[in-house]
Image (cartoon, rainbow, N blue to C red; front, side):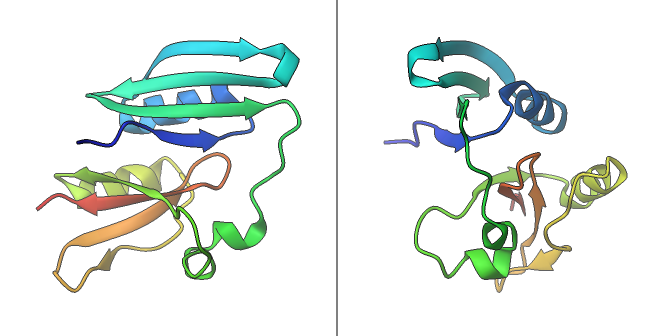
Amino acid sequence: MRLGHVALSVSDAERSTAFYRKHFGFRRVRRYAYPDKGVAITILDRDGITLEFFEFKDHRPLPAYRRVLERELPTLGVKHFSVEVPDIAGVYEKFRKAKVPLATDMRRFGSGARYFFIKDPDGILVEIMEAL
């Protein structure tokens, strides 16, 4: 078994596609439009990892409390997704220089592995973890 995909509701699929292409190397594979339902779906892929964007015409913004990691974690449900990188210090610096909103500074798990969180264009939390 393996994870099939991660689905995100976004306000602007083109903007989100550009963000995930620039910072993570995803490429757009498909786009489906369902005007009668007021939604378009965009599929991205990178090395077998699939992101599915739902872009609703009448979307609701991410609530403010879900944009702050420590306030979001106690709420039931899916919290974030994570990517592992071999050079976490280099990736951290890349995001900082690109002015990508950092949700946390660099931290360490009890195991010693380092991690930090960023926010995508809609404020969705993405964890960047050190690959061990």
